[in-house]
Image (cartoon, rainbow, N blue to C red; front, side):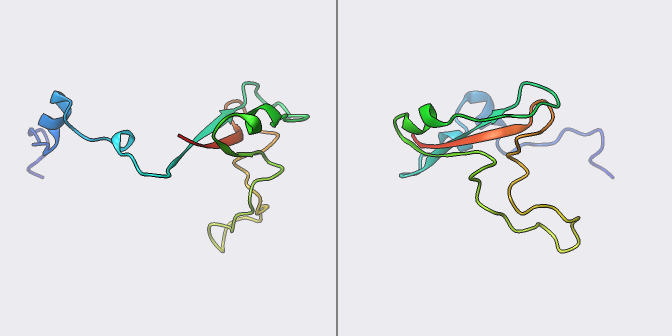
Length: 107
């Protein structure tokens, strides 16, 4: 390969170093919403309950998801191991830093 060990020209390099590059966070789409994911802070813990009342009443909040109300998802592949079709991404019993809730709100 002739490119190994050689400088590579980046078409966006000058834009990035001068601050002129557009990043995903710089793009505004009317009606777009923002999401935030809450993570577990305890390893091998089990959430006995999740009180979402305060988050649901916050201005602009459209939905608060937990393992109890997350929409069902289709399996990703037919050969996948048998798994529940509810979201394992929002589980009441996960490892430390596991996702336990998500909030969707208008900006």
